[in-house]
Image 1 (cartoon, rainbow, N blue to C red):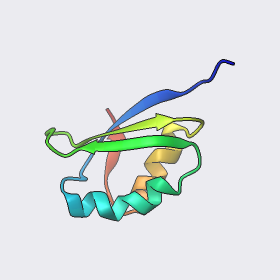
Image 2: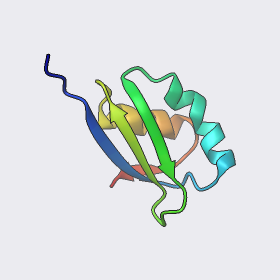
Image 3: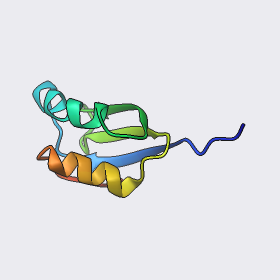
Image 4: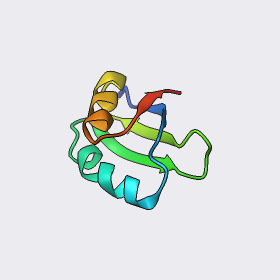
Length: 73
């Protein structure tokens, strides 16, 4: 069975463990994400989302709702 899973990458201002904790419930509860992580050591604070159906726009809206800046990488 073929799936359309893909990795989506975004630049964010999620820059510390506290920020990750703030956004965690929003991303954990978002429909269509199978895994996500933020590279807080990267200067662009890259958020990688393993999508199983969620769109780039839905990820952006979810992170903005959590109070963070986000743009496509």
